[in-house]
Length: 235
Image (cartoon, rainbow, N blue to C red; front, side, top):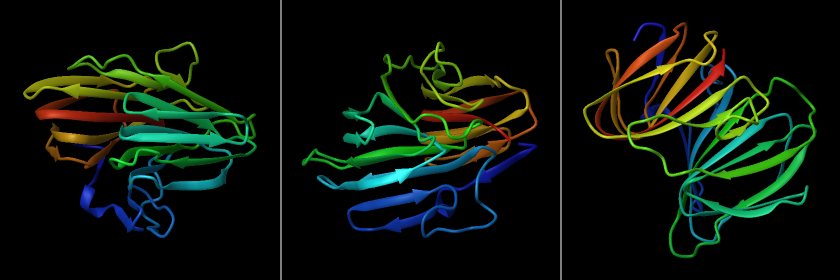
Protein backbone atom coordinates (compact mmCIF):
# COMPACT_ATOMS: atom_id res chain seq x y z
CA UNK A 1 0.00 0.00 0.00
CA UNK A 2 1.23 3.51 -0.83
CA UNK A 3 2.40 5.58 2.15
CA UNK A 4 2.91 2.53 4.35
CA UNK A 5 5.71 0.64 6.13
CA UNK A 6 5.69 -3.14 6.50
CA UNK A 7 6.89 -4.52 9.83
CA UNK A 8 7.48 -8.30 9.51
CA UNK A 9 6.97 -10.33 12.67
CA UNK A 10 10.27 -12.14 12.15
CA UNK A 11 12.22 -8.87 12.21
CA UNK A 12 11.05 -7.82 15.67
CA UNK A 13 13.49 -7.72 18.55
CA UNK A 14 13.51 -10.93 20.58
CA UNK A 15 14.62 -11.84 24.08
CA UNK A 16 14.29 -15.15 25.94
CA UNK A 17 14.88 -14.75 29.67
CA UNK A 18 13.56 -18.22 30.54
CA UNK A 19 10.66 -16.88 32.60
CA UNK A 20 9.85 -14.28 29.90
CA UNK A 21 9.77 -14.63 26.13
CA UNK A 22 9.44 -11.18 24.59
CA UNK A 23 9.10 -9.76 21.09
CA UNK A 24 9.64 -6.02 20.64
CA UNK A 25 8.08 -4.21 17.68
CA UNK A 26 10.25 -1.16 18.45
CA UNK A 27 13.59 -0.59 20.19
CA UNK A 28 13.26 -1.68 23.80
CA UNK A 29 15.62 -2.93 26.53
CA UNK A 30 18.48 -4.87 24.88
CA UNK A 31 16.95 -4.54 21.40
CA UNK A 32 18.11 -1.31 19.78
CA UNK A 33 17.54 -0.29 16.18
CA UNK A 34 17.95 3.45 15.52
CA UNK A 35 15.74 3.09 12.44
CA UNK A 36 12.94 1.47 14.43
CA UNK A 37 12.30 3.60 17.50
CA UNK A 38 8.59 4.33 17.17
CA UNK A 39 5.63 4.85 14.85
CA UNK A 40 4.54 8.41 15.57
CA UNK A 41 3.42 8.58 19.20
CA UNK A 42 3.46 4.76 19.44
CA UNK A 43 6.70 4.04 21.28
CA UNK A 44 6.38 0.40 22.44
CA UNK A 45 4.47 -2.69 21.38
CA UNK A 46 5.72 -5.69 23.31
CA UNK A 47 4.38 -9.19 22.73
CA UNK A 48 5.17 -11.04 25.97
CA UNK A 49 4.77 -14.58 27.30
CA UNK A 50 5.35 -15.04 31.04
CA UNK A 51 5.69 -18.52 32.52
CA UNK A 52 3.36 -19.57 35.33
CA UNK A 53 4.05 -17.96 38.69
CA UNK A 54 6.55 -15.41 37.38
CA UNK A 55 6.38 -11.72 36.52
CA UNK A 56 7.85 -8.23 36.67
CA UNK A 57 8.92 -6.94 40.08
CA UNK A 58 8.15 -3.42 41.25
CA UNK A 59 9.54 -0.90 38.77
CA UNK A 60 8.91 2.78 37.90
CA UNK A 61 7.44 4.62 34.91
CA UNK A 62 6.80 8.28 34.19
CA UNK A 63 5.22 10.37 31.44
CA UNK A 64 3.91 7.47 29.36
CA UNK A 65 0.45 6.10 28.60
CA UNK A 66 0.68 2.32 29.13
CA UNK A 67 -2.00 0.00 27.78
CA UNK A 68 -2.02 -3.73 28.59
CA UNK A 69 -4.12 -6.25 26.66
CA UNK A 70 -4.09 -9.79 28.14
CA UNK A 71 -4.50 -12.51 25.50
CA UNK A 72 -4.28 -15.60 27.72
CA UNK A 73 -3.84 -16.24 31.43
CA UNK A 74 -4.11 -13.93 34.44
CA UNK A 75 -2.22 -10.71 35.17
CA UNK A 76 -1.90 -9.51 38.75
CA UNK A 77 -1.25 -5.75 39.07
CA UNK A 78 -0.20 -3.83 42.18
CA UNK A 79 0.97 -0.21 42.32
CA UNK A 80 2.03 2.46 44.81
CA UNK A 81 -1.13 4.56 44.39
CA UNK A 82 -3.37 1.95 46.00
CA UNK A 83 -4.50 -0.26 43.13
CA UNK A 84 -4.41 -4.05 43.18
CA UNK A 85 -6.31 -6.18 40.66
CA UNK A 86 -6.22 -9.32 38.53
CA UNK A 87 -7.23 -9.06 34.89
CA UNK A 88 -7.39 -11.55 32.04
CA UNK A 89 -8.56 -11.86 28.43
CA UNK A 90 -11.38 -9.44 27.74
CA UNK A 91 -9.96 -6.71 30.00
CA UNK A 92 -8.04 -3.59 29.01
CA UNK A 93 -5.73 -1.95 31.55
CA UNK A 94 -4.44 1.63 31.28
CA UNK A 95 -1.90 3.56 33.34
CA UNK A 96 -1.09 7.22 32.92
CA UNK A 97 2.36 7.24 34.52
CA UNK A 98 2.56 11.04 34.62
CA UNK A 99 4.78 12.36 37.41
CA UNK A 100 5.71 8.81 38.35
CA UNK A 101 4.20 5.46 39.30
CA UNK A 102 5.66 2.18 40.54
CA UNK A 103 3.97 -1.12 39.88
CA UNK A 104 4.49 -4.87 39.67
CA UNK A 105 2.94 -7.39 37.31
CA UNK A 106 2.99 -11.13 37.77
CA UNK A 107 1.17 -14.26 36.70
CA UNK A 108 -0.47 -16.05 39.65
CA UNK A 109 -1.89 -18.91 37.56
CA UNK A 110 0.24 -22.03 38.03
CA UNK A 111 -1.36 -23.97 35.20
CA UNK A 112 -0.64 -21.98 32.04
CA UNK A 113 1.46 -19.13 30.68
CA UNK A 114 0.39 -15.51 30.54
CA UNK A 115 0.36 -13.90 27.09
CA UNK A 116 -0.16 -10.18 26.72
CA UNK A 117 0.43 -7.13 24.57
CA UNK A 118 1.81 -4.04 26.24
CA UNK A 119 1.62 -0.73 24.39
CA UNK A 120 3.30 2.54 25.33
CA UNK A 121 2.02 5.76 23.77
CA UNK A 122 3.76 9.08 24.35
CA UNK A 123 1.32 11.50 26.03
CA UNK A 124 0.25 14.91 24.77
CA UNK A 125 0.50 16.35 28.28
CA UNK A 126 3.32 15.69 30.73
CA UNK A 127 3.50 15.41 34.51
CA UNK A 128 -0.16 14.60 35.07
CA UNK A 129 -1.32 12.94 38.27
CA UNK A 130 -0.69 9.17 37.91
CA UNK A 131 -3.81 7.20 37.09
CA UNK A 132 -4.79 3.52 36.86
CA UNK A 133 -7.88 2.22 35.08
CA UNK A 134 -9.28 -1.02 33.77
CA UNK A 135 -12.41 -2.07 31.94
CA UNK A 136 -14.05 -5.37 31.14
CA UNK A 137 -15.00 -5.24 27.47
CA UNK A 138 -18.41 -6.42 26.31
CA UNK A 139 -18.16 -9.50 24.14
CA UNK A 140 -16.64 -8.43 20.85
CA UNK A 141 -19.11 -8.56 17.95
CA UNK A 142 -17.73 -10.58 15.05
CA UNK A 143 -16.86 -8.66 11.87
CA UNK A 144 -17.00 -5.23 13.51
CA UNK A 145 -14.37 -2.90 14.97
CA UNK A 146 -14.67 -2.35 18.71
CA UNK A 147 -13.16 0.83 20.14
CA UNK A 148 -11.15 0.03 23.27
CA UNK A 149 -9.16 3.27 23.84
CA UNK A 150 -9.78 6.92 22.93
CA UNK A 151 -8.82 10.42 24.17
CA UNK A 152 -12.27 10.87 25.72
CA UNK A 153 -13.39 9.47 29.07
CA UNK A 154 -17.02 9.52 27.94
CA UNK A 155 -16.36 7.44 24.81
CA UNK A 156 -16.56 3.70 24.33
CA UNK A 157 -13.68 1.85 26.00
CA UNK A 158 -11.12 3.52 28.25
CA UNK A 159 -9.07 6.69 27.69
CA UNK A 160 -5.54 8.09 27.62
CA UNK A 161 -3.79 11.48 27.47
CA UNK A 162 -3.24 11.44 23.70
CA UNK A 163 -5.18 12.01 20.50
CA UNK A 164 -5.14 8.27 19.84
CA UNK A 165 -7.69 5.51 19.31
CA UNK A 166 -7.34 1.73 19.57
CA UNK A 167 -9.74 -0.71 17.97
CA UNK A 168 -9.82 -4.50 18.00
CA UNK A 169 -11.81 -6.84 15.80
CA UNK A 170 -12.53 -10.54 15.38
CA UNK A 171 -13.33 -11.36 11.76
CA UNK A 172 -14.49 -14.36 9.77
CA UNK A 173 -12.72 -15.26 6.53
CA UNK A 174 -13.53 -13.54 3.23
CA UNK A 175 -14.65 -10.28 4.84
CA UNK A 176 -13.92 -6.81 3.46
CA UNK A 177 -13.84 -4.14 6.17
CA UNK A 178 -13.01 -0.43 6.20
CA UNK A 179 -11.38 1.84 8.77
CA UNK A 180 -11.88 5.60 8.72
CA UNK A 181 -9.39 7.60 10.77
CA UNK A 182 -10.74 9.68 13.64
CA UNK A 183 -8.13 12.36 12.96
CA UNK A 184 -6.96 12.70 9.36
CA UNK A 185 -3.51 13.88 10.54
CA UNK A 186 -2.89 10.59 12.34
CA UNK A 187 -1.42 7.32 11.13
CA UNK A 188 -2.54 3.76 11.90
CA UNK A 189 -0.42 0.82 13.01
CA UNK A 190 -2.23 -2.38 11.96
CA UNK A 191 -1.13 -5.42 14.01
CA UNK A 192 -2.36 -8.94 13.22
CA UNK A 193 -2.81 -10.84 16.48
CA UNK A 194 -4.00 -13.96 14.67
CA UNK A 195 -4.84 -14.78 11.08
CA UNK A 196 -4.09 -13.43 7.61
CA UNK A 197 -5.20 -10.15 6.03
CA UNK A 198 -4.46 -8.01 2.97
CA UNK A 199 -4.18 -4.23 2.78
CA UNK A 200 -3.61 -3.16 -0.81
CA UNK A 201 -0.76 -5.32 -2.11
CA UNK A 202 0.53 -6.12 1.39
CA UNK A 203 -0.27 -9.50 2.93
CA UNK A 204 0.04 -9.72 6.72
CA UNK A 205 0.21 -12.92 8.73
CA UNK A 206 0.22 -13.51 12.51
CA UNK A 207 2.12 -10.72 14.35
CA UNK A 208 2.99 -8.86 11.13
CA UNK A 209 2.18 -5.15 11.12
CA UNK A 210 1.69 -2.32 8.66
CA UNK A 211 2.10 1.36 9.47
CA UNK A 212 -0.21 3.47 7.31
CA UNK A 213 0.17 7.25 6.86
CA UNK A 214 -1.33 10.11 4.84
CA UNK A 215 -4.75 8.62 4.29
CA UNK A 216 -8.26 9.21 5.58
CA UNK A 217 -9.45 5.61 5.32
CA UNK A 218 -8.39 2.21 4.02
CA UNK A 219 -9.80 -1.25 3.34
CA UNK A 220 -8.72 -4.53 4.91
CA UNK A 221 -9.44 -7.86 3.27
CA UNK A 222 -9.74 -10.65 5.83
CA UNK A 223 -8.34 -13.75 4.11
CA UNK A 224 -8.92 -16.17 6.99
CA UNK A 225 -10.39 -15.97 10.47
CA UNK A 226 -8.40 -13.18 12.12
CA UNK A 227 -8.01 -11.00 15.21
CA UNK A 228 -6.63 -7.54 14.38
CA UNK A 229 -5.55 -4.55 16.46
CA UNK A 230 -5.57 -0.99 15.06
CA UNK A 231 -3.55 1.71 16.83
CA UNK A 232 -4.28 5.22 15.49
CA UNK A 233 -1.76 7.78 16.73
CA UNK A 234 -0.44 11.26 15.91
CA UNK A 235 2.55 11.16 13.57
